Amino acid sequence: MAVRHFIDLWQLEASELRGILDEAHAMKKARAGWPKGRADEGAPLDGHILAMIFEKSSTRTRTSFDVGIRQLGGTSIVVNSNDMQLGRGESIGDTARVLSRYVDMVMIRANDHTDIEDFAEASSVPVINGLTDRSHPCQIMADLMTLEEHGLDLKDARLAWVGDGNNVCSSFIHAAPKFGFTLAIGTPDRYAPDEDDLELARELQGRIEVFDNAEDAAESADVVIADTFVSMGDSDADERLDELEPYAVTEELMELAQPGAKFLHCLPAHRGEEVDSEVIDGPNSLVFDEAENRLHAQKAIMRWCLDK
Ligand code: CP
Ligand code: NVA
Image (cartoon, rainbow, N blue to C red; front, side, top):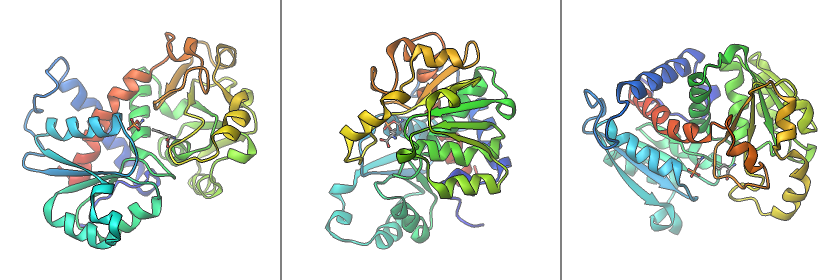
């Protein structure tokens, strides 16, 4: 069987993604109320080791993968890329071949998406994308799980993305044709989503609408989604903050959406920049369920990668 990498959502069949979410819901329910360090029934990844390589900061991804592999019965090693020979010029291919001899699976948070593709190409164990400059697929699996948990049928749902058409937005674009939701994106032209992603989603019959303002995107949406205006690695912070200011999620913007529309944000958030505290700390914000579900969704992703 070919090695199962989890690099981008468009590379998986809709049925595989559906299976991962179903598994995530079931595993979360099965351990409700348990201490967080207790292993799941049957410890499905008993004896397996996950290596995690970080080129950028992380709170949620690092902790949720580490806790997740332990709940599955496995163990983890965390490596900062600066401490590896990678930083002194060892090739990505050689690093992947070597790590494949020690561990069963590798999660990478990389600056450059092509580095993760090169790593996966040389790796004989599954590679999981823990965020790159181009995408953040694990995040979107947790986000969709959260919406389902709160009663949304994704096939009928209208999701609005407002702000920067960034890496997280790209993974929502990849997910749209796979799960059948409509994605309405409101971004300034300068920070519009990647054209290749939009074309790919449309080829797969994804329902994607792109607007140059936040209001048209938020109109009648079931869910409004924001992310930081300045992502890790962006060097033009001042210009972004200026240009993206009209795309902030305020109570007025939420009023254009469906009554009771939900709010999502992958975190970390900047209150008063991309979202007002009344929204992110309000009754329709799901951000902490969303953060928790990183754990459950990624456990299902790791099981899918190892077919266990
Ligand atoms: N949302 C997310 O990926 O958070 P971290 O950067 O803290 O991992
Ligand atoms: N778009 C953000 C997401 C952080 C989880 C970034 O890349 O920094």
